[in-house]
Length: 100
Image (cartoon, rainbow, N blue to C red):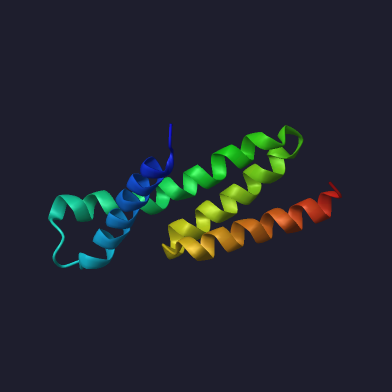
């Protein structure tokens, strides 16, 4: 079986999805779509955090504190990139302080 047509079809679908995101401006999108998109940042945030929390169980306490810092920053600022950087900074500093 040749996988090349399947790869081309998957690439076309991904390209169409990404192109549609550029073509729709926020004012043109339906209300239900705008309401749906409000949950994307927290979904991505959760998808990044949860697997890494379970990867090293001995560092779970440090990771929970770093997660709390990142969650507080995203709650206060509503800036996803700032919360990721603050959470990673807190994780790095706490790991360094614990000597782990």
